[in-house]
Length: 325
Image (tube, rainbow, N blue to C red):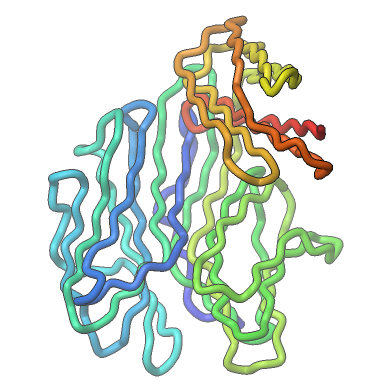
């Protein structure tokens, strides 16, 4: 049976959309590496804004840190809302901040400062924004904490429709598997020093299991953000072709409403080639793009991957296209 818990810190119904962003790369802070910073860009001023920080430390050590949001010091005290003992030595701490009053539209910087001979390992930093947008409604349940799966432990979750999980696999050889009601594996988390962010679109039950032959292996579920969205029709077309080393893109907003952003990302054989962002795209608005590319004259097939992301508040629609030359 897993130990620890995922505690619900907010749930209900909201007339708008909810956006979620997570930084899952582990960072160890000490007297050598004293600070970790994270940049974010908010489309609007959120109606509500949560910052969730999760860290691992030694049980006998209570950290002293300083947490900054832009030039505002949120705190210099380490006061977890929830903690779970991993073993006899380590503990995972979860801290949830509601920083709505100091949040505004635009770019922001979050910094965690911890200058100590003792190590504090940041496991996950999540940001959840509530945007009031006409025509959208969202039912939601937001949970964070540390639910520890030891060897062959499993736990089930009832999903709403769209769910985000943050999971760590601290095993040497174990595998964390997420499976549906038929037992089919829909996601696998391999051993890693970083956390994994997982998105599942399913309104059924999923089961998470740590499969391992090593009794010292374990996995951790750090967060579960569950959403059921109702939104206006959001769609856009993407027409593309390549001629004389030029990628021609024609984008058109075919949604019922305007879009906040259209983001275009072009990769050639896995290498980034172009990144473009367009804002405030009205209904029926069109964008013509000509993107030069350098295509080597060899026999190797050139694969061009085009990803276009349409954004309205916290809602995202993604279209992927591939061209092989």
